[in-house]
Image (cartoon, rainbow, N blue to C red; front, side, top):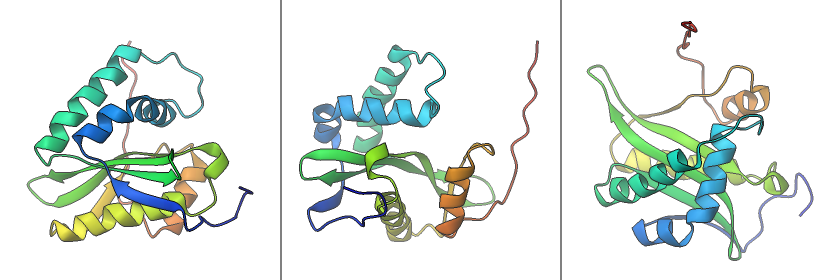
Length: 161
């Protein structure tokens, strides 16, 4: 697949169930690593990610999480994990993790994953989707802005020594 070529007819997006999480746990592990450490410059605690995958199965059972995967034939090439979040002032569908294999970026897969999450948000009666992105990840920032997202708040952080 060449860069910029749109997804083909055999590409599909589907919601994953608890059984799928078990079947595709190695793919999900790799996607979570991409999300947590996009520059591959840090050591990732494998146990931490494995526990997230185990917890994800329980979240799906309780309708506390929605996981979508993009497939090119039998190959998982994209992943999105989101969930409803309720605060005293709003209810949002939070996109916690989204990743697309590097060879498949720029082909509309990420946008299709986001649109699928937005449709779930509508079905749940939730009017907003939100996500957090590192301000230094300009490519991701532009991708989300191109998909209609706006910067609504900033997160400030201070390192305590």
